Image (tube, rainbow, N blue to C red; front, side):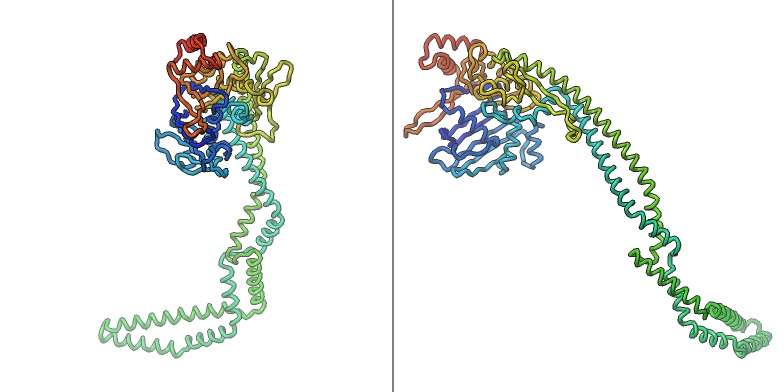
Length: 559
């Protein structure tokens, strides 16, 4: 609730500090005393458009500070957390607005500078002002659907609808992405098929590039290689070498008879030399056989090597990566058939999700219509006592075209009314004016206060054009509204309405010692309150009869 309002240099107000409590707070005073200035001040503090004409004459700037006490978990506090505005738990929320005489404006929340837009957003969660020129709150059709849902306790159905909508749109996006991938793959299908056919026919092998390079190098130097290999082979198989080794072996055998075992290591070394000599000879023979002077084979090796490298350049890869590329192309071709199957599956899943959303939205829509009937009946019961007996209230729920379906369902919700029988229903602010509009809002608010969750409501001259029993009915409803965990501030000219206030403030203006006209506000109690009610009843001259009537109105109430 609004717990404190501090006003500095606003029109006729020089300095004003008001403390508020919960319940119904009424403001009374002569016409022109400055009650509207209080409304302008509250509106400024909660984000209304700044107006330099509100700065008191001769001053450089005005300042308005509104302090709110809110329960933890209130939507406005959650918004502060979202905006990373620091606040100690249990501390009040303080909105402040400064407007200079040249029209510049500054906004603050808990002493942190914020935009006017954010101040307005936070203020809209804290206060709602109902008067002849109000254009927000329930007069804004954009709020009607959420208000109806809150009134009907449709939170679980709404959440189910939102989840179904989210699932539907997610599946739709998945299907579209798969469709795009498939279309791209189909656009490349001819290329893929040609590439697979070409690579399959060529059949590149891992390591083939290096093997062919070595083979080509070998064949290009084959003549020199053969000449050198033959020379090595001839030298290796020279009979003299073999003969010498054998002679040395026989000589050592003869010596071994004289000294047994002494020369065995040397004999074994000679045996190893003979074996190594034979092995080297065999390897030379093998290398000689490998070297082929056939020019046709060399040409074939070169053609294969050049074709392999050209194919790699064509696909912007390396020769060794061509086999893996072939497998990738084969997989992409295979995925075309699977992609079509997946697309069919996703389309079916999407349709199932759409059906689930449509069913959830249908259940929500039916619940909204039931809630609308209850709300219409409840508001209609309030209208006759408020001197709106010929008026009617109707909550319209219309189905939106599918292109406008959203997470909150398929409905368009609008509160409509008519003040004269036989006239078509229309937006409340279009068919009602002045006091009628305020009383319509009162009838709605009595039923919707808890659903909306706005802690402070302000009614500006809700009693315009009424009196007697109707004024009493207005006062009763304001009192009842203030008992619904809601603080109500009412500016009134009706003594009947004023008598219902739990707190009574009188707005007056007077000249100070310098001759300036200033507005002041004083909370009334006891005899002072009785005297103000009597003044409102009697007019210019307060009489004993008006005081007695005031006593009658205040009987049983807080004085």
